[in-house]
Image 1 (tube, rainbow, N blue to C red):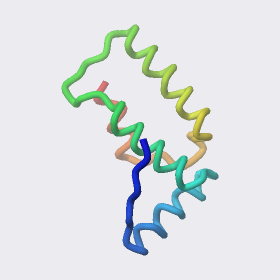
Image 2 (image 1 turned 45 degrees about the horizontal axis):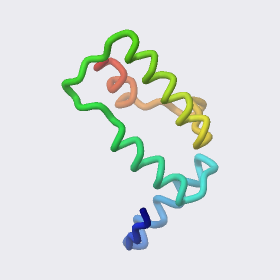
Image 3 (image 1 turned 120 degrees about the vertical axis):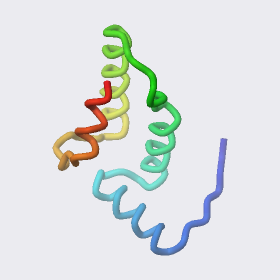
Image 4 (image 1 turned 45 degrees about the vertical axis):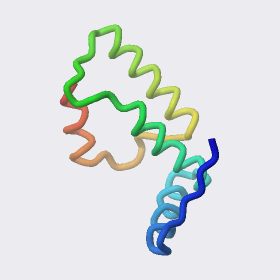
Length: 85
């Protein structure tokens, strides 16, 4: 599917900066954001051990595909996000 988005200049500049920080093209960065949002589990979902292993495998594949790294600072919100499971 192809979608055309129009951003305010300041939003565009912010997106470009974030994509560059990750060494990604803007299109790849936006694709990663959308995929992450769509594939995220609902807040009330609890994972079994097998599901957790599958989720970790998928995250590792996603990170490799989009050249993401935990070498970047991990924020407090990301740490709290992980504690939900």
